Length: 391
Image (cartoon, rainbow, N blue to C red):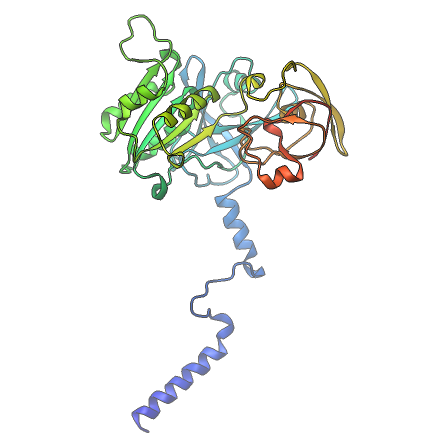
């Protein structure tokens, strides 16, 4: 047998072997089809571990931060903590005075810490914050969502020169980013401009000063709007002139904003004045407007105390105040509705508006297709008359 015949024979034998096993082999360029039934259990386990719909979290430590804030450190007791991006949040569910409600809280601990740290600040007239600050103790267990949100650093889009504009408790997602950057020695240049009313309200102040002193790439600037007598630090608000003086040339930098709505609007105007491109601005909203009656477009003469009837199709009729988010009224009256961000962005709380009118501030990021089909975001929708909705 010649060498040519031997090679031919071997090629034929290999072809037959491949043909017999073709059902178990992948064609060139093809991956595994994990939609096949035999993979479903594995897929479910992997997805639920990485993206759990819910988690049981136990309070392991309570860390005082300021006279009006503290951090809750929590461990997961029904499985391992899932991975998350620095800057994301979880929705915490709780029952307060018989009302089942939830609130989103940014994670202030860095990824890989082995626990989740949620930092809570008191809110005058608040419902949830006073409970978390005054009633919660070590050992308490909460249900939460998995990590969510898109307020995090994207290296390919955001670059390596970042400016964080924080106000009040809006510092919390930035702490996760800063702690991760410093702890893992990620080569980023970060300048934090933190606006606070008085020194006593500054959350993480001591830690931020130490991190800035130890990490050349991290700069910390504290600005007080109501400084005490004799204060020699930065004063005022995060306006265009101050931002320009502190960060210098704005081109090439990505700006992140997190804080109260009034601060968010103020900073957006400042960045527009500085000619910062919209694509170089990232933001995270914190809840509905503080005073919805002051929002552009609120009906003149309508009191926020006006009460309307809301019929939940197939369920019940409940009262709802004009100046209160529809989602709050549903929860207070025992109607369980889905929610996540409670800021008008994620659409988890969308409901079908069958009849009636609602007021929605500009932050309600309702998709155009949802608008055409009559959907609204319950967390930032305020009744202007009697309503009929479907969950």
